[in-house]
Image (cartoon, rainbow, N blue to C red; front, side, top):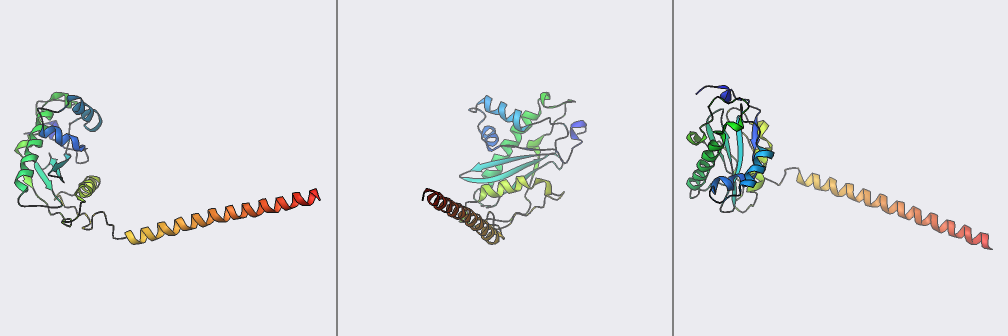
Length: 213
């Protein structure tokens, strides 16, 4: 296919809220008003759109779907892959891709409509390497947020690493220590000001008593 909609701008991305995925997976029971709000706040013109980021939830676990129009791929990022769940998660992603495709078939999404739109549901899956969280960790949502926040770091080969310690920043100890030190300094400064003010008040009171004598 060719057309202006397929001259992709690699900086043009949509970051969608979690309830978009819920709507895509429950097309018979969602509130149209919610989708209208999402469209107004999160979806711009689809001309030259390159990527769409969709956080998805299954059985209490968050993972990320990136619908990549430039490479015609459904990028699957998961911080805790489980062979028993991958098939169902991919099925979810296909449903979401088809829902997105249906939306983007509406000429109202384009400034310059030429009848072409991305056939997202036909894209193949891409599963780039992704570090895995600890099985006892509850940080899957943090990983998804990090992937979305660091979207500008993605290269053509979809390579992006998230620190394997997830929310436990490797310099966390130093940051905490500096925060405590800073807090102690502020507390001491406040205490010294109050102490100085109290001494001044006592001194003034003594002067007043001398005047009475």
